[in-house]
Image 1 (cartoon, rainbow, N blue to C red):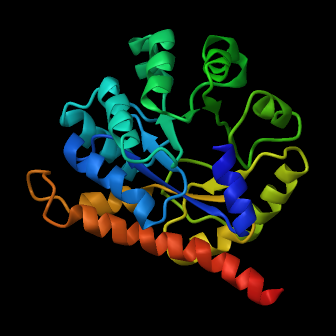
Image 2 (image 1 turned 45 degrees about the vertical axis):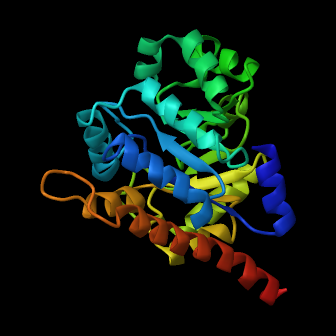
Length: 277
């Protein structure tokens, strides 16, 4: 993770962090999508762990979790998918994103050990506050996993130090209040908030929630270190399913094309900055 963001800094650009849900619409198809992402321009990959009650996610990501669970995806399958990915790609960081309940059911110690063995780089567990760090965050960090936290427009100066206390890898700034994929961010307000966060941390700052187009990705890449996109990608997956929920021919290629467009937008921000200077 550190090397990837250091490389991005040396290149003078932000990174693209696409999100997919593991097992959506089935394990084989999502594994193929995962494998295609680095070639399409992904710098860090967020891989969703499907859960039946993803309270921070909007309709698109909720639906992707439901499709995955319907296909029979288990948390062990998610870790196996990462392990298979690592056979051909040791460089692209993978962050597992989701909720604590499946991890608790799996067992905290076995999950951490298996995640490290599979090649997971970091975790975003959206429903674990800093007050619960001793139960999962600290053991995960001790094992070598980055623990990435969310900051939001409502995270004030009193709460921020607690959010940052055991955060590593990068800080994920939620650009809107509410759930994923339901509104577009006010870019001026997001830029102001990112600048505020930089006064409190040296961690790279990625911005997500509500970013759907290459144009939006370009704007965010002009002031953030990373641009996270999820709902637009899972919507593309949903748009390429047949009436039975099975993947249509060309689904992987269409998702790859979408991600490439987002990556081009992110990279365009660096080009614009160089031209301006």
